[in-house]
Structure formats: structure tokens, C-alpha cells
Length: 402
Ligand code: HEM
Image 1 (spheres, rainbow, N blue to C red):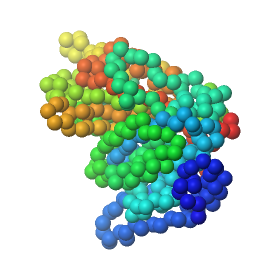
Image 2 (cartoon, rainbow, N blue to C red):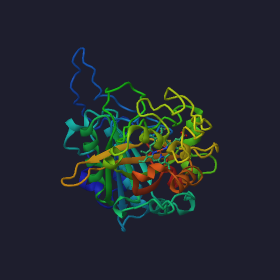
Image 3 (cartoon, helix red, strand yellow):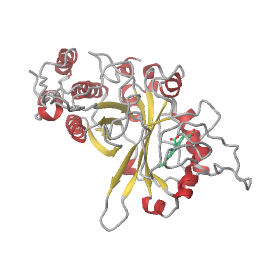
Image 4 (tube, rainbow, N blue to C red):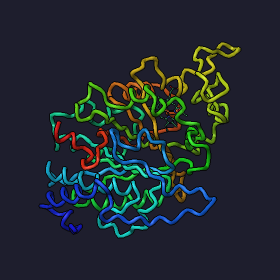
């Protein structure tokens, strides 16, 4: 057995490669599944697993579970191409095990790993990581976003070399996975920021229900449906991307503060006009059901547009089929003694090409969107999300071989 210390310190590449090659095939060398048996008649989901290996990383097309934490790391100055490779091999092994309810090497809390509750761990690469591994294949869009007038960015919520997105239906599963990953990253980098958020709990409403954000809005209606051709086209990197990214995508993560107290001051009709949809069902103001198409030409008796010119829906929308994104965000809220809650949206947008798809939308919203009155971007980061890997490989391998 390879000791944990040996894995994490220098000169352990061969040992890791051997250990991982030996374990990723079956994930059973030190695995201990301690999940309790399911009592008859009770519907439990703690044992549900999302496959880790595959053409795409899990955690994007996967139905979003209740909890999500995004961890960004700065790589240490001492990390070179070879030690970066070692880090990715090690983290892949951890992720492959944790997502399947198995204990990573030297996990001392096997009971916590036993219930993955649909845990996914998704890797993302910042520009510095890509240039360390293979600067020739840097995607043209992989850099911080241009500055927008609405931005009030705090450096502590921005950028990063390596992203690990950890999502599950159980907060304890997320916490344990995060702790293991942070522990294993210690030899290679430091945690730059961690941002956690939530949606409704599993089983609280029918699966497939569009999420609600903290303004109470139905948020995500116009998303392309995972599994559809439209989704594949919007999300997965195509021929224009560097070859290593085929089957991958990009993530723009914006921490957007939402002023809940000021939103409260607006009456219901004002709140509905701000987006162009009803709060109760999420239907466009020109329709009755969430899925009804919005009629942007409809006018009131006074001849005013039913969906105002400044409404978020109208401003975010375009006829250009290229300017589409897939949103999969999480709410965050921290109560603060003596002041307004720190609340908002971890706005997570996935698209094949940030410059062609995300930036034109954000530019339009920057120019005009009434929602800017109540929302303020305070964090921003862009990552390349590499494709998935097969058993025996590691996430990001194609970056080293492209
Ligand atoms: C806290 C900030 C935000 C909130 C609360 C918010 C909320 C909403 C809501 C309620 C909808 C309507 C339902 C839906 O289709 O999802 C919507 C639509 C949309 N939002 Fe946002 N949004 C925010 C920020 C952004 C940002 C930063 C972008 C991109 C740069 C964006 C892009 C879109 C797009 C593309 C649509 C669909 C428009 C359509 O085709 O109908 N949103 N958003």
C-alpha cells in the first residue's frame, strides 16, 4: 500500500500512476461501502450514484442536485507540468471514488463517503493551468471577462487556476468531498475561494421543476434541455475549439449579489415586469404557462409593450442562434448580524465558446437591464471544462497529449 504522505510529496509519480492504475479499474482496493440498508417503504436517495467516467464530465448535463460548492485553487509557484499531472491523477482518483460512495485513499471518514447522494465532481482549468500544461492549446476565450459597467468585483471571488465543482443532494456529502479534495490539493496549491449554494431539497418538488432564485423567480426556463441536440450544440466544444477540449465546455461563474430588501420594496407587478414573466408560474407576461413562447410584439391597451424594453427576458434574448448559454446556478444566502443578508446567485453558465456565446449577452445586459437595479456582480471567473475521462485515465489527460 502506498502511504498518503508518499503520494503527496515529491517523487511519487510512479507510485501514484501505479496506485491509480490499480484502483480506477475497479475502485475497490481500499473501498468500504458502509451504506446502511434501506428500510422497507422508505424512499432514500443517499446511495444514488452518478457515473464518473464518460465522454463528458458529470455535473453539467446532470440534473442539478440541491447543493453545490465551487472551489478554486491557486497552483503553487513550485508546481511544474509533471507535478500538475500528478495532482490531476490524484484528484481524478479521489473524484472517481467519492462519487461512487467509495473512500479515497487514506480517507479516515469512510462513513461520510458512503452516501454520495448523486455527488458529482467537475474539474475546470484556468489560463495559468493550461499554459503550464500546454500553452500551444489555450482556448482564445480563456481569460477573465472584459470589465462591465455593472461590475463591482472583489478579487477574493475572482479567477483561479483550478476549479472543482462539487454538487450533491446532501450537504454532508458535499462537505466531506470538499474536505478530501482540499486536503489532497495542499501539496499542489492553496484554496483561493469557496462558494457554496443551494436549490430546493431533493424530493421537495417534482424532478425537472425549474429552480427558483431568492427573488422567487422561476429561473432557467429558457435553458436548452440536457440530452437535446440544441443542448449539445450550445454546451459541448466543437470543431473551433482546441482538440483537447472536444467533449468539454466552458464555465463562467459570476457571484451576483441580490438585494433582497430592496426587491421587497417593489410591488408584485413591478417584480414581474422586471423580468417579463409571472412569479407564480414563470409564464411570460404574454402567456399562461411556463413553456409558452414570449410574444415580444404584444402591446397593452395603451400601446406599451407587455414585456417592457428594459425587461431581463427581452434584453437577455437574441435571434442569433449562436448566442445561447446553459445556466445551472445555485442560490446563496448568509444572514449577517446588523445588516442586510449577503444573498445572491452563483450564476453558472456553460457554453462551448465564452466569447461567441456568453459575452454578447452580458454586454447587452450591461447596457440595459432593469434587473441591474437589484443585482450586482461581485465575483467572476472563467474556466475551461475538459472532457470526461475513461477508467484508467485522468481528467485533463488530453491537455497533456494534444
Ligand atoms: C442575479 C442575476 C440574475 C437573475 C436573478 C436572473 C433571472 C432570470 C430569470 C428569472 C429569467 C427568466 C426565466 C428563464 O428563462 O430562466 C432569466 C432568463 C435569462 N437570463 Fe437571467 N438572471 C440573472 C443574470 C443573468 C446573467 C448574468 C445572464 C447572462 C449574461 C443571464 C442570462 C439569461 C438568459 C439568456 C435568459 C433567457 C432569456 C430568454 O431567452 O428568454 N441572466 N434570468
